Length: 265
Length: 270
Image (tube, rainbow over all chains, first blue to last red; front, side, top):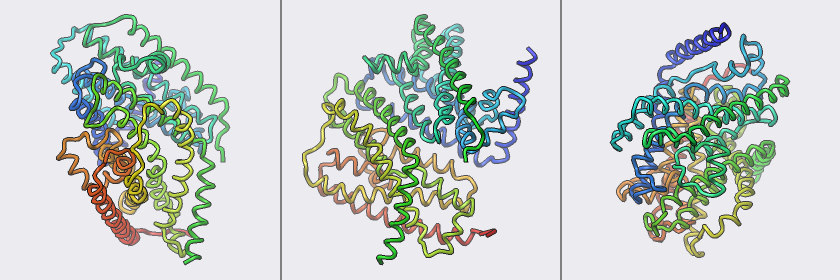
């Protein structure tokens, strides 16, 4: 319990530092918020353009697809707000030797590396992503129950855990490779599948992106919960996948940490 | 003249060597881009389900367009050039070029060409490996004028890509942090360059408008020529003329930013 309070205090100290720093560079903050907003617009534009030429994608109509895309953006904004900068900088710090700093911090290196900074612009756009979900639900005439909404939130958190873990695994490869530059591209590539309905994938693609790398269920399970109520089999799969990937990420990070020998050059 | 060429040839060779150090990163990046290609195949395959064409093009033509886009991206896109230029200005490394008989634009351009040569060749490896799987899903137009037009279009696309990145890098003379400008511009380029969807799927008025912007000529124009999405020769010729205009306009902007930026620049230390 004491340990939990200790880490909560550390996280709050990091959050306070991030807010102060963001307010020091207000123009930058506005600019980055616009950047994230624009990228969200790009995702919605793709849906709008495709549905100008077709009525259905794998049986999903435009507003059902918007619900999936909105959920994907929500998970993504939370990831950007909480973890992205920290993990992105980890790659650079391991290479330059600045990672030493995190080893000397009063907490687990993984916690310190993952939570040192918070990106307010990611948080600012998370409510907008949620607004997209709510608007799509409104256009679909959905009236979800309290339990459906609560489960939607739980599944979004599971999705966040899966995304965080896969990103951590990718960035941790920097302990073995000369540089992790470009590896984040792999994450973005895989994440694109989170904007697709499960029914669009068949054969090998379904095995890879639904079961092995569960990016599809990260968005499909919460979206389907709002649309049709909870479906326990995929929901349990999502929860198990979150636990599994978190475990793998922690193991890979710790193995990498053993290889770390300060500055490489 | 030969001495000048030799100077930049040496920079090009050094660029090749330093980029080859990161060959695995390029190879990994190219392999990961196949994941994007898989997404494209799934999305457009599902969108085409039950339809023979979208925007007047078949599924095979659309998929060919995206494969071409992917390949071209590694040969002509600016990747880290803006950040590298920004770093050189911020760290004062640029000072050495002010004292030497080296044109900074040509220096950076020589490095850009060498980097794209390495990344392009490495990107071809995973693409060629999966090509047997994709072969029956792709279709190229028969050999004709469009391939000949594509050669100058590709050269000018590379110039536009690099010069835009160069200009963003030079903004460091005015702004300490330019990353947000770059990412915002990247989002605009990604959409209006036709990387998210072929621009001809836009409503006609928007497509016509986009054809006057430089982004259209960064990627979409050469890819559309090579994949048969532009079939009117007069329209393609007009496109080449507009592309040339943008090359010259961007070079003028780059020159202006360089001369104005240097007035603000302070070289400290030795």
